[in-house]
Length: 135
Image (tube, rainbow, N blue to C red; front, side, top):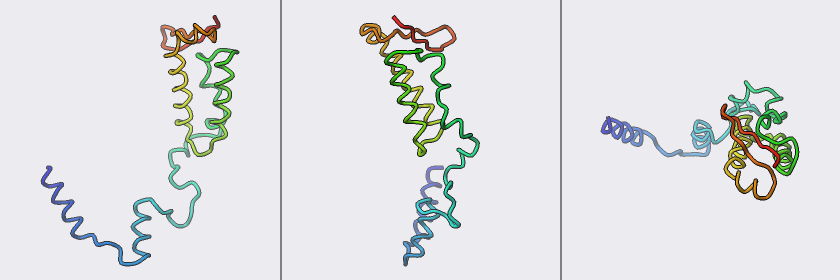
């Protein structure tokens, strides 16, 4: 198997010649995904986002339910994070959700520090939801 792959790679390199002009170079770059395909489509490369709705990108407050406190510094910080993420059109909906969940896990790991400074206490329920209680 390894030798067959090496042979295929050698044959491919032997048969592939470097581009002789600008047009051939552009054809190679288009095939590699470096240049856009014609006709130009502004949503090229975002096929996985076609199944997502507008609400999944903008209304991110649902990802705070169950773990974020109703008030306090953590809530204020997470509101700012959500506003920033909702205005970021370069990120996909799943990437935005993963950022929010990363902050949830971060605050969960900093439970002792949050309790010491009086910002709240993170408690993990039996159903693996994280809940923050005001001290």
